[in-house]
Length: 622
Image (cartoon, rainbow, N blue to C red; front, side, top):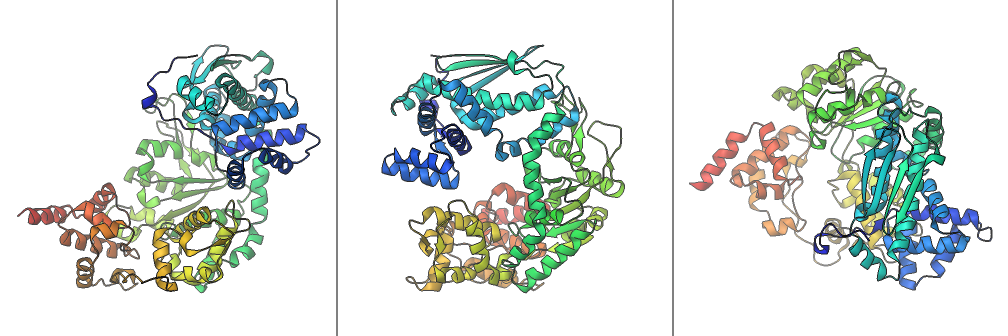
């Protein structure tokens, strides 16, 4: 047994395994055992052998698709091998690995690396294949395994072992399982999945030349992938057939989806938005989606693509926020880079604009693009050409652009933070998505619509009067908050009927005020900034802050909505908070919808309030 590399005290075992692996086991048992015939019968037999508590838990996991515990996965392997009469784990578990990596979810996680390798043709194929293999192993095994890789001229060596054999061994033994047998089960499952990736990506891959071995809780695999390996285009096409078929089915049902969507956009304002979206979809013009976070900008962008003449081509989504990495990283993803363009750029990389050629690219959070990136986006829009990072050759693309932002671009243009010429280029067909509080009449039907599509919602329903009561909560997080609140309620619900007590605390408090369940909490002072009036009553804002509950009460769930209709209101609100709270960013965060001090510092800099913040702090010290 390989010695541990650290003490048990410094290691916390992540004992989860993705549910699709368990589903693959059931599929194979159903296929091999004629007396069972269907996966549902396989699950009935599995559950019948469990204790009541374990049975209830596994049934809930099966309905929701959440992770299973590692020991449960090993019990499932052992049962399935015995049930099918397999001669040891090798054959059965390799088939599980191959079946698991055929699933849309795994292929979906790997679509972009597959396409990048295909476009590069050679050179990066071997590295990409190994990246996908190792990524799959670590996603399936979490921190239970260590994987090392070594590239030889005629093969790639992967070595896999338990990360902490003593800790994992003790964990398995308390459930009556043998660690070495469990490792063999998992090793051959991971081997089957890795073989699947290699066979689909590498043209010269010969499975007969594969070599492997297992000893104790460690194993190795020698994949016959040469340094000159070429990409297998034909097998890639076969791999993507199922994924593309699903995309086409969604595209073909897009028009029919209009009828379904009309059930959840019954308000006049949303009908007007949808009609504008429907008409914009027919054209090739740039659409600028505007609205608060959580209002459904990504959903609308997908609908624009599905209803457009480009529906048979790719839709590529990319967030331009600087929070995801350096500007070089964002630009490399968008435009690609040449080998040696920057440190770590060891191979030429195709960008997302190349992948979107002929289709649509959705530029989310365009208001967060850096000045350099804004200039490059303007050039792409004006000329349909771009250069890779470090490149000199113009690359031409035919794309349709959909952009989105929750920021006030007009204010940013006035302040010099956003290019005026780019603003006019993207503001061709603006679509303003209203916050949920402005279309409260949609909430009951929308709640039913979202609930019906959540995993594990079968047999569950909202208490009749509750559906209507949800209209009276402000939903500052909009549709996203409503969906997450329903997930919370579904998880907390003990029977078939969801009640107010099953919702998160903020929603429960609002519902208790409506339904009379106990003494209603006194309403918070109204903030003028939440209205559409262009003028902000600063005196009223100051009174609201001074009349607010203590910070302790605020942190327990009651707070203020930021007046977010216009950037001007947000600036005035921040100015007032700085003055009233002596520039204390931690305290200001309790009154703001984004409490991160880093975010607040960025806003102070963006609004040019650094001097005001310093002056407020100086006054507090004196």
